Image 1 (cartoon, protein in one colour):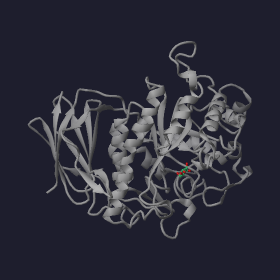
Image 2: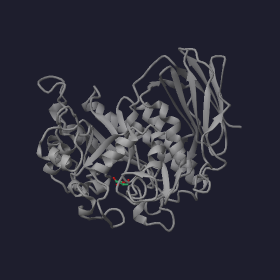
Image 3: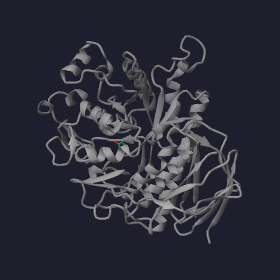
Image 4: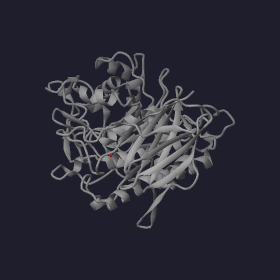
Length: 511
Ligand code: AHR
């Protein structure tokens, strides 16, 4: 038999709103993410609009994709936006030194990206170049994108065929400046973030939300230096009040789930139960990291006006055999979907501070939603975990408390909580997410429902006969959500038996 979990769910204690942007995405000029994944060019036989794949657009729209980060990643600090505008045949080429050392022809640039965002109905999140760019270059990019009058950059945009300015809110100040983005020390970067943040200006009614490039993993000192970099501007008194956070409004960090050492991270599809549990221990660290960065921020900003942004997260395994090691192409199994659901629960618990998160990456790279091969498109198990969770976007967190600690396994001396859950409410419905990480045993769940009556629950489950199951062009639906009849409301409690290695969502109409 499996473990028993009992607790309570309060349906009328509405907590902070879960920003829809924690379900955000990331597209870098890396491997086949942009070229082949999002963009095939206008002459392709694959149905497209302006070169953008329509099958990819349709699949991502079904996730209610809230935002898309671009053009990197490490690529962002090598990217010079002026090379990516104007007639395609005249655009200069460059070397993509970080990713496969391939030649980039700049055929996908600013206009193509903004067109993609419009097709997706997603907000753009542009990562500006701090590592090898200048404040002037960044300043002009913002002007080009967002200014309405006949300024030099607005006129250049018009000459390139776009009359109206675009709305751009999310603006990144470089990427991983401690590594590929310039190998800087925190103090040096914090000064650059202030400088570049100053010249990334608001034009007309367009207000930027500037995101300083943050820490790796548990580098809390980096976060501390960035918070100190905001200095007196964080004060609640004086002339800066209200608009005092003028240099940057958020700080980011990156965290990848890597189950082995960097030189041997392990295969995405060929793994044993022990590897799986190690992966899940790494995935669960996100809870501790969110709490750690949030605690540092609380010390400087108890009013939580500065946002925390996890603008890269996801699994990072060895590349698929026979593929370019610089392209970071990996398959995606049920294990990846469970990594995602564990992250979502942690995101919800930190909704008061976390304003955005971006899965790395959306198509054909690392923990992808979609895998393409020529004209074929496969939705991964991770895609389905995102789709099942989209009801949490902009919903309010509901307190879900367990009566005793969640069941745990010992994984090389580290406890792995095998049950994870969270809940939110929106539009007269509660959405409860429940994950059983135990590879072999089910878990019996009983949650007392308090504060409101509920109608008949409807539930879906994502699971498979094995953790390594995945979708391919031949078997695109090996892992897909199914209706789940095992959830019932009895005696004022939600009861269900979660099968081994499964993710379940339950929707409860509130009365
Ligand atoms: O997502 C792949 C890479 O991982 C990004 O370019 C970089 O920011 C991180 O190291």
